Image 1 (cartoon, rainbow, N blue to C red):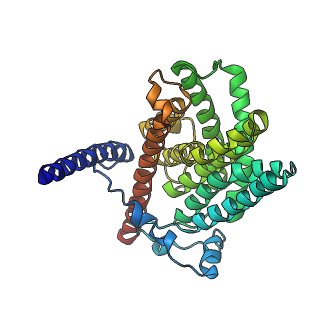
Image 2 (cartoon, rainbow, N blue to C red):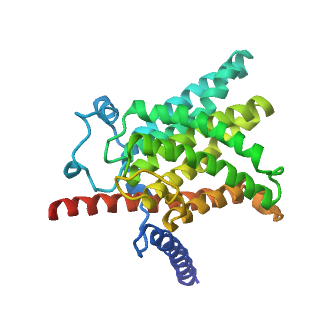
Image 3 (cartoon, rainbow, N blue to C red):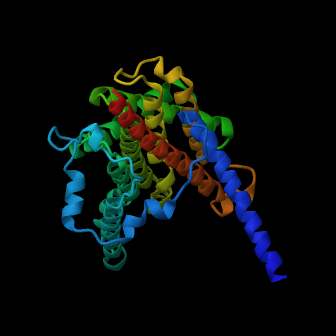
Length: 340
């Protein structure tokens, strides 16, 4: 009986792996390669659990200048292993804990603005740092990334408000209304992402992931701050952890899709957004957003946040596929350089 149970477990595990392989193969086909992508979470985040000297962290931030941007030949195509983002998250988390202690123990309302700011910032900003780390080209500086995070986040909110004035969206509870909201917000962010890609003259998938993540992270921070001010601190505690799989990664997907669709060394134009390589990922981001806002009739999906977890998983699978495409792009470009 014990052996039969073990065999059944193995069968279920193989079935889940087949589903994952089919999903990554389909998404990878959108990037131009018809193969399944192996996802190694522990390998990718293995450096998180190791000791790192302060100088190692400093070196990760000293990039993006003429003297610190490596040549294409020196760019690494090895699997990315970000770790600094976890220290940033820990720092912000500890700061939020102290502010919460100040509020709960000493009943100081002066801690509330700080709680809202740090709580809204912690996860999206840490994710933006992760994408900054995995930009192996190291051609975007900290100042540029901060500019995209702040100006891009606010500008995308402005663009969203403009589109809301033009396009009716409803309250978001039914699927068509949620779809309209997803279309409006992802389109607004896409316009700002495209602007910064053109402004910085970016041409690589990892660049698109980073710029998209920064715009999405800024959007998430300011949106969560606004909702918390309106509905109270309980909103902050819910939205803070959920932001691991929302605007930051949705916008990173859109940013990478823009790079995939545009011709290298050429600016983003109207023709870019009608190409299949862009449209597929763009529609995926809209659908993920719509599914997040939609209130399904199936009660257990909402009861255990199963709906949210499924969306987070799908979004991250797309991110891992795009990271794989980014590393493949490095190897392709380096091979072309050697041939030339």
